[in-house]
Picture 1 (cartoon, rainbow, N blue to C red):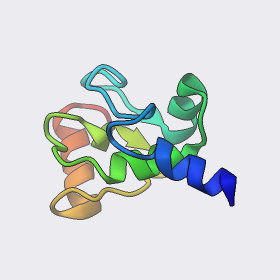
Picture 2 (tube, rainbow, N blue to C red):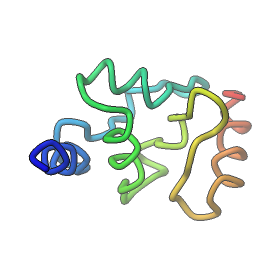
Picture 3 (cartoon, helix red, strand yellow):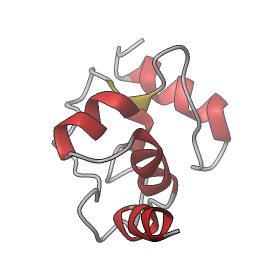
Picture 4 (cartoon, helix red, strand yellow):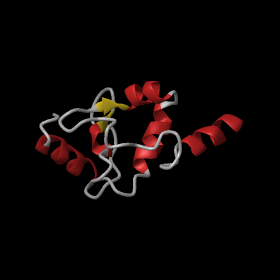
Length: 92
């Protein structure tokens, strides 16, 4: 139980796993696992943080993908928008 509370705290967009525009440069993608290893947290915490992103255009959470496939996307338009944004940036 304590572990799940800890992950919920880390998943906050203002917490230790808050996404930053520099975590994945334009035209590149990172996996949830890569970011988790970089930040010393769990891939699920990264997914929760990017899923809670209130400004997906300024904080480019669409550049975070699963190891196999796109993963999820909570921005307007869902996965269709994520794929379109990545194509616009020549990242896929």
